[in-house]
Image 1 (cartoon, rainbow, N blue to C red):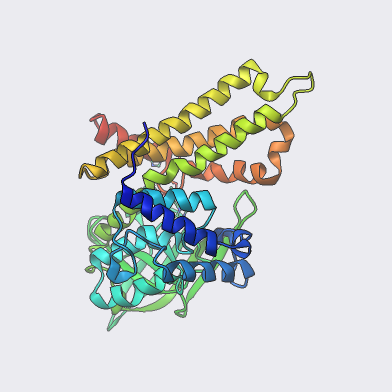
Image 2: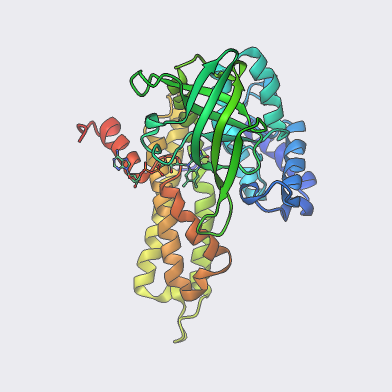
Length: 388
Ligand SMILES: Cc1cc2nc3c(=O)[nH]c(=O)nc-3n(C[C@H](O)[C@H](O)[C@H](O)COP(=O)(O)OP(=O)(O)OC[C@H]3O[C@@H](n4cnc5c(N)ncnc54)[C@H](O)[C@@H]3O)c2cc1C
């Protein structure tokens, strides 16, 4: 099934494509992803420059309302946007978590002042945001978090540790969850604060992943005085803010298949070109063909799931189980692709971009909700099975 795009969406595509052709020049095409950048990295400066260019043309967060710099774009324009940015290989923002997760929470719970001061700077990449939710003993069970904040006059005094914090090494703002009422049931004593990372007492320690990159961090808070104006939503109502943030984390379902399917296409090409030593190529091997066919079909299944979500959205249905299903299929398929690449390329799969991707994709089944937790959600909320 393929969607017929309305004429307006095709007109938007033509404008965006022309703009990208003119502006996404070689100097930006060669910059590496902001995720692994350090503060003094020239690629970070390039990424910010590119982000500001996009924002000035209102091509950063097209679904945002116009008053915050978006276009109020509908779902089909968002799909076209994802396709064109992917086609060009252009990053859409330095605020990978800010735009998709944190901004919706600020739009929902923020004061007018928070919205009007923080969102435009986030959009242009003038500020970079990170999400301080997970702790060493609170990941899947996020409501078990222990970092604390105690009111003292017009400040909260924050102490504790966060971990797995993506972009913390370059972020100057953090959406932070803290426990403000230790006596309340665990979901009820949590508060969300928007924290300026320059405050005294905050220490960021980068962690190195198995891919050898510093993309996430531990953050330590020692007697950090955060003004009460940093509250996002009401005190002790932070769980609602967290849910709004995490719901949007899984919202990019319609675009998930794009990157993965192009990786599968490259793998199929490689299999046709990689000699097996007996005059045949990897793609001629009957056992490998089965595995290649399987990952190809998994990629197509993911596309159908995305289109199902899209079709639902076009008919006014809220995003339903597709987000959990798509996250599950996307993350597991990515790892299957890595395993099949190993079989096709042999030891060569351990170096270069495949080498990097094959280890980096191990985190896909953990980040943003683990496979096991996703399966629980699907079992209970989609299949109606009882809690174990
Ligand atoms: C690349 C990456 C980026 C991340 N970025 C951020 C970030 O920017 N900010 C942030 O706050 N966090 C971030 N995280 C953290 C992420 O949200 C957590 O890793 C995730 O929630 C899992 O928590 P955990 O690592 O503590 O594992 P745990 O929750 O301790 O889980 C350990 C194992 O137990 C299983 N398990 C746990 N509970 C259940 C259950 N009820 N039923 C069945 N199995 C269960 C899990 O599936 C897993 O296999 C990131 C993680 C990764 C990998």
